[in-house]
Length: 172
Image (cartoon, rainbow, N blue to C red):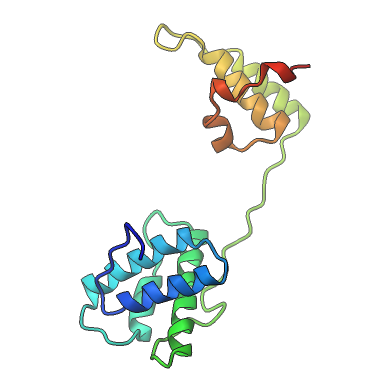
């Protein structure tokens, strides 16, 4: 069914069916597959004899993990909440975490730099020393931060840029 997805808990068939159900609804469901795979491993390792998803099992799964952000935890819980609802709809017993059971994470408030702060930052980039190992470090950092600041690109987009992404024909 799914080439690289090997599930081994008592709920493996239901997880496969749940993924198929979501895909038939038109969802890509890639990130959730990883969550469900981890949930299956969790069940197999800690609750291998479980025949239903109790409150104890679900709350154990929902615990905040070291180095996990609130947003990732919320995504993990949401996926399993949907899975439990799916099981309930099929007549199986599964405790579904109520909405807002855990407090929502605080909203991220971005810091907006002033023009003076941006100018000082770009000036500081000019003072970065080059080295034998990285002879173009100063220019690279300056260009990267200008793309971030002036073009609104995300850090991952700038990091993954390649020379072949540059179109010399469309230069101004």
